Length: 292
Image 1: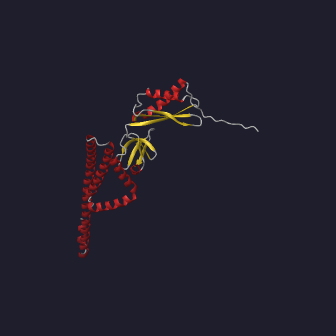
Image 2 (image 1 turned 180 degrees about the horizontal axis):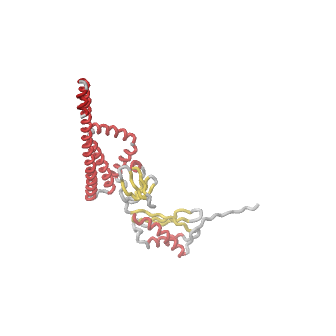
Image 3 (image 1 turned 45 degrees about the vertical axis):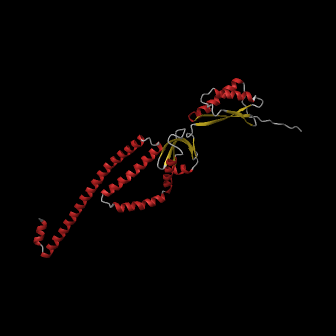
């Protein structure tokens, strides 16, 4: 009403200018409303796509996991593929959500590729770890549940991920080792073979009957059913040390019995020697005093 009164009381030129300003304001306001509605629609669609996409990603991850388990795929390959599939699906979801917001995904893909090159150069170590993970899965120097030693760390393999191998040490520490280093380092796999050789060095006093000690050790080994008959146990004098005659003992056992046999045999030899009166040596030093 005030606008109409202003137009009626104003001069024709002023009235025309007032109408034009009001018309431009209405156009701008309408454009703002249209943009807000359009942005709101895109945001709503993007939100729905994100929620639905996350549900689909979780569902596909479960499907992939079950499929790998049904096919009895190696546990290390399973963890690697699950991690890789999860990353790829989430990247696709992000691109889809950005496209729903009205962003040109073609230019975004080009920008993503350029960023990927830059990030790849910055994260060349991680790319090396990715390649190392593929090498580990391809050539299988170790598998999940194997007990290995790598980079000075001993432990049981819990997982083989895209970038890291996870070890659990004997004192229950979790160690993450980059796959790049595992693929190029020396790896000792204690679980690969079915049998392992156990070795002890037993010292006796000088003057003791070596054959008597050797017979006592052989009796201990023969009484242990975990000691394999083939290859046959080996018992022989190895060195004449400063304070003792050292006898080396070597036997073969199943890999899972290694540490039990190692510790039990030491205890049984100690008890047997004490029972038979075979003396263990103590460090000795002879001092000659010269009197002038």
